[in-house]
Length: 308
Image (cartoon, rainbow, N blue to C red):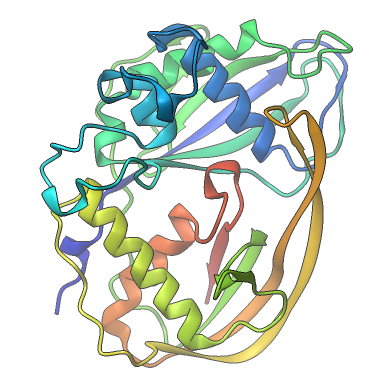
């Protein structure tokens, strides 16, 4: 069974931003970056200019902002079986490091990865413009600090799409998935992984069955909305077993501008030693490490890395 055709294509871009002034930013910058990107897109493309929430807007099915940031598009989408949904899984994720320090000096850099699925890549020029527009927004209002776009690079090809203030119109390459992983691997959870069972967060118990089912369910949902609609078949047996568990729960500060409050949002951090039982599912495991898993992946949570 070749499952690669049943996994949506993903494109990854390395983004480098530079500080306009000395400033203080949160240790985990994923939520801040998501908020700034969303604001930049909404300023430029929102048809109602902040008059209402996206989900309540009568123009949401024709709005670029609503599709790219909220995963909202017309229920007449080609996959009719999902027509009852108002919110689809987001067509993008952000991979931001857990910490690059709080204090930035002028011209210091921060890096993150922007991952886009096939439909979102069609709007690449819009994403690039939103990244450029970050310079109009305050990342640190108190110190009037902004983040200036320095470069955008397509990760697989190394092609630079933005540099020295110029957008380069170039062909980008998708990420190639590993077809067969070694029998013994390590999953390193770089940013907090937030999974739930029966509506409750998993604080310390993460079984092979739960992790395999979450990976499979997410890919099938994404492919149903943004890919060819084919589901990866599953016989209910885990395709890997956890042979070593070094996970622990870590809370990280999180600020919600919408709620105007500071929160602590944590998840599982650390590493898992896994033994691949069915190598057919290797591309699925690899995809999960690229596009993220669990809740709040658009803010950089659920970032994993495969180590051999």
